[in-house]
Image 1: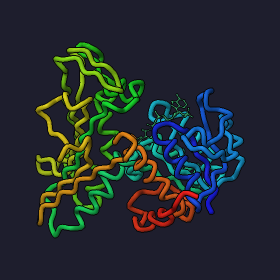
Image 2: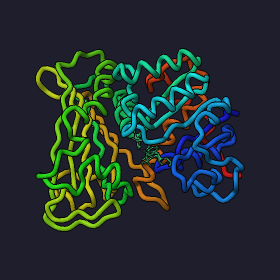
Image 3: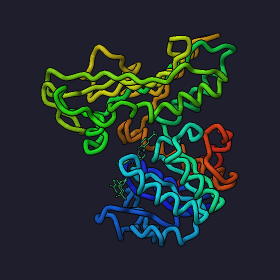
Amino acid sequence: MRRVIQFSTGNVGRHSLQAIIGRPDLELVGVHASGPDKIGRDASELCGLDTPTGVIATDDVDALVGLGADCVVYTSRGETRPMEAIDQMTKFLSAGTNVVATSMVWLVAPRYADEWLLGPMQKACEAGDSSLYVNGIDPGFSGDTLVHSAVSLTTRVDSIFVQEIFDYGNYDDAEFTGVSMGFGMTPDDETPLAFLPGVIMSMWGGQVRSLAGNLGIELDEVRERSERWYTKERIDCTMMTVEPGGMAAVRFATEGVRDGVPVITLEHVTRLTNAAAPEWEYPPDGHTGVHRVIVEGEPRVEINTHVSHPLLDSTDAGCISTAGRVVNAIDWVCNAPKGLISVDDIPQSATMRGLMWTSP
Ligand SMILES: NC(=O)c1ccc[n+]([C@@H]2O[C@H](COP(=O)([O-])OP(=O)(O)OC[C@H]3O[C@@H](n4cnc5c(N)ncnc54)[C@H](OP(=O)(O)O)[C@@H]3O)[C@@H](O)[C@H]2O)c1
């Protein structure tokens, strides 16, 4: 039985919290909340369950570190406050508590991450004899495990094309995703954060370089591209209302280039409702989203992944999958040698253990 802390209960965190409470092989010992409306409430309440756990949400990080848990699931948004997130994560790591995280997506390919981030994390793992693993669905699964599966079906690879095509219209996150991607903004507004030079590459470039490393090839360069689509009609959706002239879709990619052509591409087509960017590709067969890989080679392999849920929106299903990518690795990470763990280190079959549980 692994003693686990859930750190934050947002879009991803409430799903990892449900999984920790439900799984018989994990024991919830603590919950962090930063919002005053969440502090002091039972963990169950914060993730939509009925039976109280007796574990009460707190914003006291030192008290949580003092619990000496085996692992913390860190799903607090870190990319907008990286220094604070590093401080919180390293407190646990230095004290010997392993960390699995969906936050700090630059660490999905840790061998290609920058020193400002790697340095403190490695030092903390060393001090606490602990490990850190970061993953998700994208960045994460679609640029690692999905590609590994497709490539395993080939005898030669010419190129790898990974795509996330998603309608974010039902994603209730105007404040972060909406603002950082610039939905609703006009061409005269300032460039949104996500499309400042180098930002796309910082998020997905590590995965491109990691795939090149796995293939044993040298890339000439890793580069980024993006284009935005502005609506002529008003678009109403959960994320926001986009007035005519506002941005309602974006297509962007990170490309690994060899001999002048992109051989590894991670592309995103993100729209608010199907009314946006009709000339761009849609997910196949009426799905609201797809995580896809196309490997051109011998033979051509295409795998389309659709996550969905009978009650929830597909963006929520994606958040459940993101939580699953790291919660399922807890046991392995707790046994791992100290340091930063890459998805390449974990035998994927090991992440299945404990998954077939039923609610009591
Ligand atoms: N790789 C992937 O596929 C993938 C997919 C989805 C998300 N992610 C990453 O996972 C993380 C969580 O995503 P999310 O959608 O769950 O995020 P979110 O709901 O926007 O935020 C998660 C939590 O972060 C805490 N938080 C937000 N702003 C804060 C601030 N200024 N100070 C302190 N705490 C703050 C809040 O915690 P409280 O609940 O305690 O108030 C919030 O509920 C992000 O870093 C995101 O980039 C990765």
